[in-house]
Length: 188
Image (cartoon, rainbow, N blue to C red; front, side):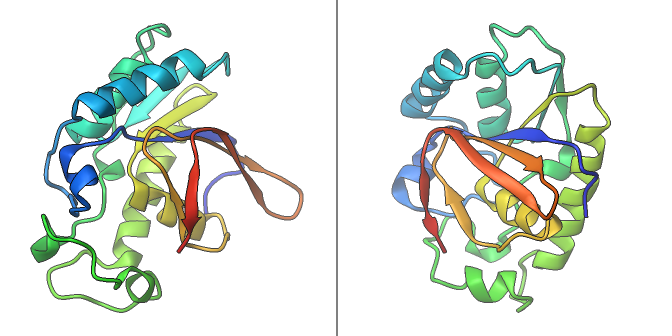
């Protein structure tokens, strides 16, 4: 579980590997021109959420997205290693083959970080992020959303498009997830 502190989340902009449908994992793939343009468009459309802190994965695709989003804000950028995408090991650079649902359910894959380990790593990263002055903007990866859903007691499997701004806020019974800018790609 995570503390009942609201936060905002952005999935990084597009990379060449996103466009080609290749898994990136820990491979440090930078934004492509479209990804930088997506981040610029989101920056212009973000509105005023009163962010006081930005926490981002140190992988360049997330870091570059955060840097673009921060241009008007001028906040200190906190790179949090625990917010990296899950380690896909030998599947890096390949196209997903439909094993994500089983993996999220606890199935182990040789050379791949387990979903349980990944979720606990994301928990540590989010605790660090949520200790920053809020409201906090977290910029990370699509798989991080699955770990967040698990940590917040939500159904796991939401896919959000690159440069989608999502607000996570606690409600009386459960957390509410609002898409503020960008699109939901579907439920896996």
